[in-house]
Amino acid sequence: MRTLTYSVTLLTALGLASGAHAYEPAGEDVVYEVGDESFEGYYASAGDMARGTVLIVHDWDGLDDYERERADMIAGMGYDAFAVDLFGEGNRPETTEARQEATNALYSDRERMRELTLAGLAEAHEQGATETTVVIGYCFGGTVTLEIARSGLADEVVGYTSFHGGLGTPEDQSWPEDSAPLLIAHGGADTAVPMADVATLVEELEAAGLTYEVEIYSGAPHAFTVFGGERYQERADQKSWAAFTDFLEEVL
Figure 1 (cartoon, one colour):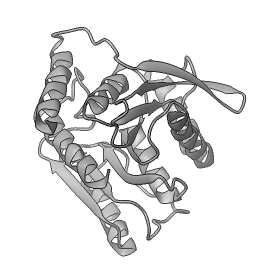
Figure 2 (cartoon, rainbow, N blue to C red):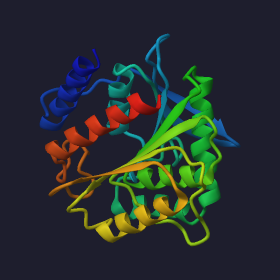
Figure 3 (cartoon, rainbow, N blue to C red):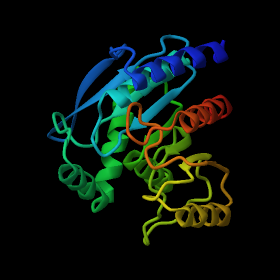
Figure 4 (cartoon, rainbow, N blue to C red):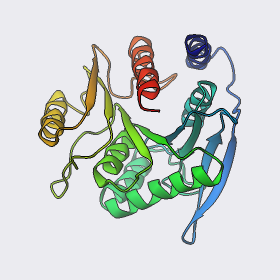
């Protein structure tokens, strides 16, 4: 059954990449409050038989149909999925400058980055998502995912996955020895996050005695999973999604 579900959802994704159909969300957008600010996430439920929850952290352009599509794919695999919003309701930057401004604001305020991510996790549970959770992120979201992993603040999280995310550890941070397992999916041709960063991360994880896997995909550039994007690589997308599927089976 898992193989069939994976095949269907992957074909759906590839259809989107080729323009074969217009994507229609199966879940629902969710407006929630963090302090006096409004945010808009996306929830896709797997129903009463959900085997766990996947929290999705968006790329630097904010939560859009890419994260919604991934959430629907995950729900189709039997897991509740919630795509968190870190930029605020209605803030979906469209220019490079606006995207840099939005992400740099959080890079320079890691406490707020963690607060907003954990608030999204709390909202997922408010929506009915199961407690046991895996956190995943794409590009900027991959950086956020590792930030949460290092924080040790989310007891219900049993695994972390970064897809072509930033891998650097801030100078004032380190890896806790009890961090949950990690899966790192990285493109061998990623010039935004060089292989030297991968090697440094591996050294850090080894020093902390953590369980991790690093998948390197030949010829895959940064953002290799983004459907329809100029840097999308079907082979790397399929292989990284299969690795992620196996990771979910292992930790949830």
